[in-house]
Image (cartoon, rainbow, N blue to C red; front, side):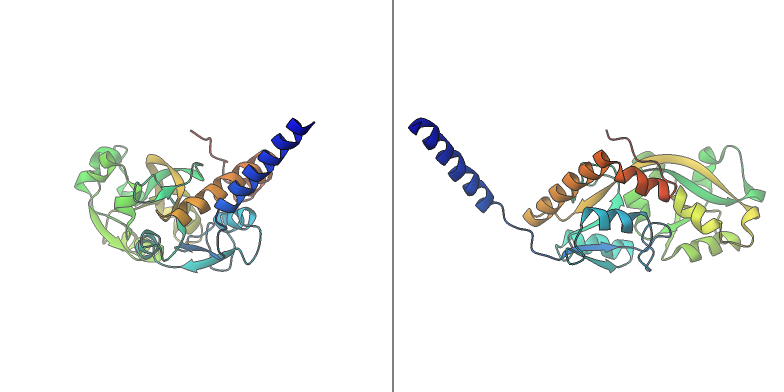
Amino acid sequence: MKIKFYCFLSLLLFSTCCVSQQKEIEPPIRWVTDSWPNYTDKDGSGLYHELMRSVFHSGQELNVQYAPWLRALELVKSGNADFTGAMPFNSNYVMSQHIVLSQPISVLIKKAYLDSEILTQLPELVGVWRSGYRNELLSGELKSKVKGVPTESTDSGFNLVRHNRVDYFIDVRTILATHLAKQPDKSEFELVDIGSLNLYMAFSKSERGKQIAQLFDGRFAELKKSGKLAEIYSKYQQTLPSQL
């Protein structure tokens, strides 16, 4: 009986020690993001907004800040924000274990100039992309074929193609498709897939960032198991990504 008591006491003391060594994450968790239609609209709607509200349950647990993509990356890298995304794997950050989005990379191009061999023609064309996207979203092979200039907004990217200043606008397909659907001259354009990628959430490379990443991954897995995650993705016409 005494042996059982001492075993229980030792286990209790060990558990208490482990818990005391786990630092609580001081709120709020600081999420910085660019504003993307159907993902992070500034009215609080979109796939990522709903996903984050489901992962970080308490309203006081999460704070959202909007910033241009490059600025968002720098804020997380410097530790002035806790996480951003979604983006391909990047060793400068603590990346989530879970893929949050699997998407084609596409170009928006005028139908009048569409060539069936556009992928092989890319090095001869001039494109436009959101600032920071060329380095962060494109693979090395695709990056070598893409030439052009950055722009600060999706609207300006569309207008540069519309007015023949550039040949194409490159982005994640659903971003382009959502914006294209709202254009009065949408019938003049075509979307062509030229690649694909898996996107993850990116956390600051610090002890706090690691803890928040672990919290995100654990709750993401719980949401998937419960079926809630599939409901969220279906609501925004997205397929829940298969995990590697």
